[in-house]
Length: 247
Image (tube, rainbow, N blue to C red):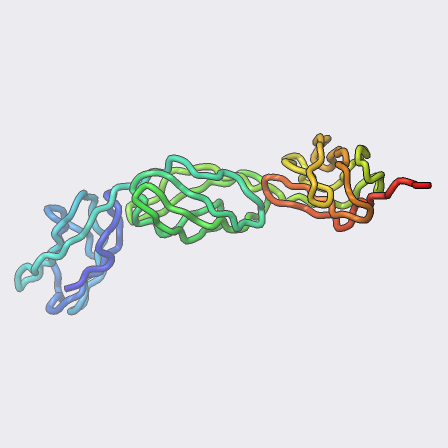
């Protein structure tokens, strides 16, 4: 006589179907000493809403012909989410996040605002998940759903991916030292600026502009790359190093 599902939260309220034979006219279904609410009954099945409970409960079906053999139903404690790392990333999603907590072994989904993803369970205290794309920059509630219920919310912040649209001036000497202004979007969190792969000193002016001083380079065009915590933006051949005169 199978039972499906065979586990649920301690708060009860899980719809459970018990299948077997000679089940018509079921008068009671017990989870341990507690009585479940019968919602449907046929000769081969009984559907109930389980009562609150804890641990492992013996489930039996009673009809006018007697009481069935017991099946096991496992009550799962409500999960607790303590933290997640990292707690921010690009609006495009794709970042792997680890959620730490308790009672996570049966995790079936992790929600980021209105979007959800299927996690990989590492242990009862740790799951990883690939962040789904966000609808806009900003914070969303993150919850983990398990057989024991849903955790309270943690916070994850979506950050816009940076863009770079222009640089001024567009050229300077190979010796470096040219003060430039890079223009784009979502530049507030800039962590690095490179010219042809060489790091440059920089100052974030605002969300749309960064001031950078060119490092020494080789004559010709080089890519200008701005990196933030949510990704990188490249201005291909954005700056041209010009060799000095010789006689």
